[in-house]
Image 1: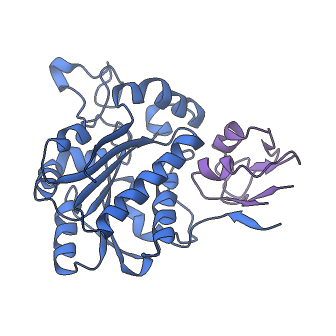
Image 2 (image 1 turned 30 degrees about the vertical axis):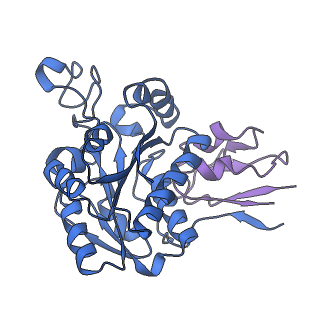
Length: 245
Length: 66
């Protein structure tokens, strides 16, 4: 028998620090597989966020740096402009990219920087224990919205892909999810396509990955993927938001 | 014929692979590993090597052979 599927070479053999059932591990693997398949490991530089994925440099087996909270697009801009031959991507959560880092995100997208952003949307601040994030759904109970998010008090969930689609600088925006094998395979294709666009110097690409956060949502892993399928993706519909070939 | 291997010390018992397996080849063990989790065990030889368990495993514990 021949080995047909195993951990990508771009992922180190370390134990992941994520909670049981967390989608981050799957997203890491998809990034690793895409980089292996495109054979760009030796010229890839990742920028890790502040959040659960802050230790991404322990897991990615290529050059990885760390940025202050919300600033990976600004750091990636600097790296890409000084090393245009390198493939630069950021890996960010919703609190990082859409709350504290919203300005950096919008301006990097508006400038059309030739970088890729992998955006993990799990509808709360995972690392700090499940507080409300900009992407939290209306009515969703979190640590800071114990009676559910109310539009009158906390506003509406931010749809980052749709927001960035209005900017002329963006080239490729897609929303994918990780709740079953079929969607995970689709997510992998989207991640790979985003890297391909960067290799072809097309410009700014972002893949929003709808992920689960079982512990902070107060669910088992199986309940959490069910909630993603039945509730989460109703608010955040999957698909290509923008693709300028 | 196909089979999978699971690194039991890495498994966190999230049960996503058990849920994803269309042939019901995976089950939780009776014992616990060093980190206190009942790990996912390959139990049956109905495996067709579809790789669904590999796709959903968040801890990259699974390898598929065909």
